[in-house]
Figure 1 (cartoon, rainbow, N blue to C red):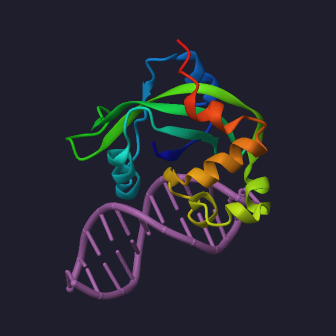
Figure 2 (cartoon, rainbow, N blue to C red):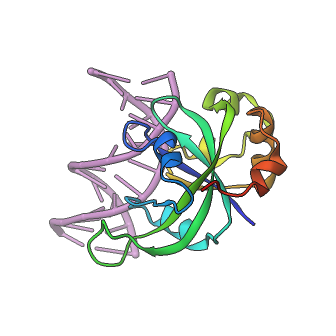
Length: 149
DNA sequence: GCCAACGTTGGC
DNA sequence: GCCAACGTTGGC
């Protein structure tokens, strides 16, 4: 299992909206960056990720799971762009802010810190674990809890 | 609202 | 294939 980070402006698509969509999940459409697309191609069903609110909140607010592998993005012309489907697993009890992430030495190598504009990013297992801890969420639960219906 | 960083586009 | 111009993102 690998770990990822999905970034969204809450005014466009929030974690609360993601939760409301349930286990089937939703297409993570709109990514128009080749690096981000390539990461989505590497994703497998069951991989876990963080849901990050950019601009407003600027914090990791939830855990998601990949519910469908990469497929053409129906909102893009042609088939050059792809997306995966993701489903909400659970909220992070204490959202982990960008400020807190930057202040944590163990997270200094995160893509979020070093390339803040990439909207889909890989996260290492160590980073995943540390952020769960900071957010008051048992990392084992974050990795293994089933997606609620 | 500003601006820096970055990715993409398009002219050469 | 290079690079300047431009648009967008996202933190501040």
